[in-house]
Image 1 (cartoon, each protein chain N blue to C red):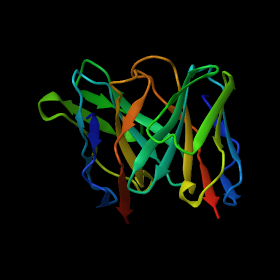
Image 2 (tube, chains in turn purple, orange):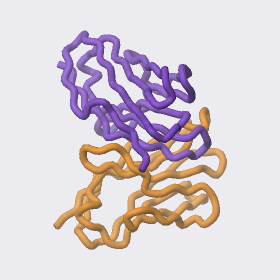
Image 3 (cartoon, rainbow over the protein chains, first blue to last red):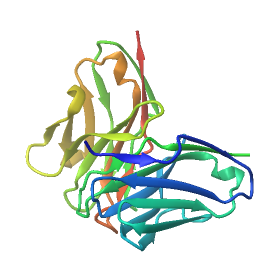
Image 4 (cartoon, rainbow over the protein chains, first blue to last red):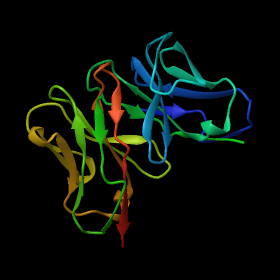
Length: 113
Length: 114
């Protein structure tokens, strides 16, 4: 069974902290994605990686960075967390082809105080 | 600009009633089209996908969707909903700019009346 796991389901951090969100997939997928989900705004793409050490900015990359050192792992980093980064964060992976199904992790709900 | 529109933010239907969730898209060529479902507190799961052939697509959990090119629509239907169908539903199309990226609609939240 395909699986995308995220390191935490719930996370509480303070303003200014550096935050790491980890995502691991076991499907040998080339592509990995980080989305942010907020009520009424749907899913917004933060960053996308199409290969190890390769990344591409999404629609809302400001305040975030990513790391992909191994094919199965994609990390989202909040360099200095702010309250407006309180949100649900979803990781996904897919094969590298048009129309490839994206497989999602369960999400991390982050609260920044 | 490329877009996916789900005009209904929230729909409530009675258990056992039929359901139709609307989706309209803008895309230059014949698109791939997706419906995903997100149960409360969970990630998204693919319900069904259209990429060619028969315009009526069958998915999991008894859902189906019909691609209508003339209307740029891909509406999701189910003949009889169950309480477990309460969830948020997202329509999506691939991005012009990158074959692997997907553009999601803003979602429709479905509530089920007992």
